[in-house]
Image 1: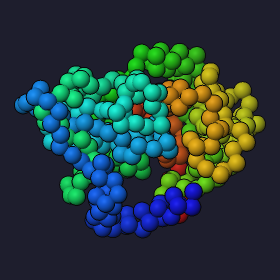
Image 2 (image 1 turned 30 degrees about the vertical axis):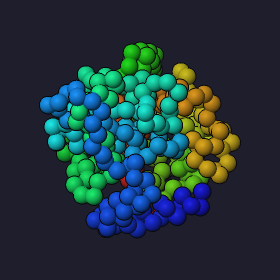
Image 3 (image 1 turned 90 degrees about the vertical axis):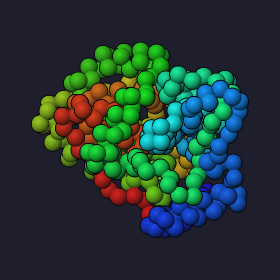
Length: 329
């Protein structure tokens, strides 16, 4: 844990100087993780007139969250578009915490980004594996704060999602049921993270408001719009504080479950506080964030998850408030 905090602190310092950061990241990757560099591959002789951009997770670990992975994948899809490559996402041969031992997890949650099959890709002549480059790294960046406050960035991400992302049938059915049962158009969507964000305060992650900070804003929204609250949080204590304040006016998805008794010793993905498999948890989380995007009114903190929700529902929000409290130091 101490080692990870030190690494994050070094990254924060270097990111004040982007060119120096890019140089040291490339140098570190060359020495210690050469497999993570961008690479050109020839697997066969198919698709000789096309360049296939094979999108891998930036790092294969058990920590990175689903919608953080999603954001980085969108950046790589934008890069492929800019260079007239054909994007293909591979979260099977290059794994994330959601790997189920069998499938390309991207294809289990979303549609593939092209018509290519895995077999075709791995028999193609011109394949580029996404990875770290010395220069000309991804020009399009989807930084969470920028998505909330830069119309150009939000528009670009929204268009990419609409063009390349379709949710699988199970997710679509779950979303439709929850939207109908919750009468989501009659709700103010409220989102905030707790647990490891609040206890660990990971350096560089966005500061989360507490319930006391959120209630005055929510009260103004309730006075203005006269709606109930659809709450999305993983933290049981936060849920109970809202429930105590608003009672039956708090709505949650039908299958929701919360994290109790979190001690704050490690990230929740490593703390054995989540019931269910990582894949099942990914579906549950994704459905909640899609449902949240259907609200007309939104009060939210900044995370990679809420960034996804905001970009997805960008054109439908009639009123919003974003807690922009800086990052944890």
